[in-house]
Image (cartoon, rainbow, N blue to C red; front, side, top):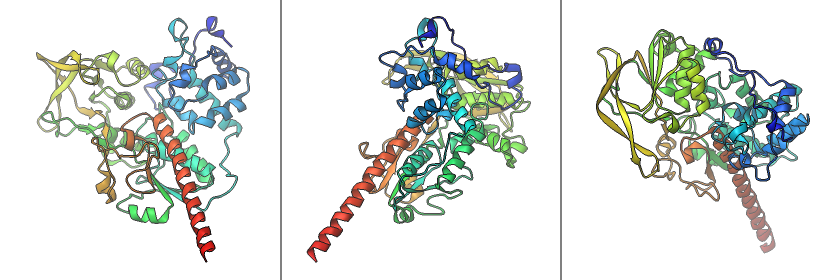
Length: 480
């Protein structure tokens, strides 16, 4: 260990931008085994591992880096998967530059350990070697748990509950398992086979999936509560935020998730009328993406691969205040995306369809209540940017679940579900919630953490319920 002094940081080989912008394959190659060991050996094994502290899952990063450096990959996989249900997914899509790697104590001057790439290598190797096995609980429990939502929070909770022997059924309104993992994230960041093999693992672990099943339409919440001993709501947030700028209703202006879903469905072989008609295809178009998060980065890089004539990203703050991963910004710039910093849309122009975005320059003023500098428009700084396709990547809000589910679920002022954080239970007894529907739009790794926590709370609730039922029966027998 401690080789960071003499061994430089080295990511897996990255495909040239000119090559990768022509397809949707992942941009990084796999580590060679000796290179993974070499990079893992750069870990300083520090006394206070800030990488672990700043990981939402508190993964045992120094330990599995040490095992990888020693060539003990089977043990490294066991340790990695003990705290993370999807290490190969997090290794691909987590913003490590803001989490574990960004808090590595050797980052300054020597560059951080490539934690995400090693994590991905460990679990990909485990799949190749057949170390990843279906769950076989020590004993089966009679209680069943219904999970609404087949995204990362729901899938993580399902795996944890199956390990404890509960009968698990997942309900999802879409036709595939994965939520935004399958429809919202492009292949160049997360190939669909990675998600689908996790689905098959859960199916082989006897998790039941009810797809194309929408709560409130195909089954009611009352029916789910009657059918299961406990219910977990892990629906995520899908309501796209909008802007009130004039002309926002013009043809050619679309929500980012609609665009990404169409692209992913087309890649999966589905018939997508809006893509086939050209409405959601960027080929030959001047594309403008509004927003600065990871969804915006997914949109601009997808547009490049579809053959857009030009791709611009408008963001009202500067690069330092970009909420998305800085690595994603760098990848996008390499692939030909132009970033228009400190600019915001003021209106959308066009007669029969959008033709220009009227943008205004922004000055960052004094910090607001959140501590961020408040954006202020600069008078007479308007610029018209040519656009045939405009994508709004402005974030997501929760849908109105109480109305959709026709039930009295309490919500917060942000319309997220209100829970008791100690029990993770909603206002309905035996109904729990986890993931973005509770904390708002966030990272996949936080969804996994919430799903794992919810599984523990559900286990405690069902154990206590079973104990009370047994004690009640004993008292009744004694009384008789």
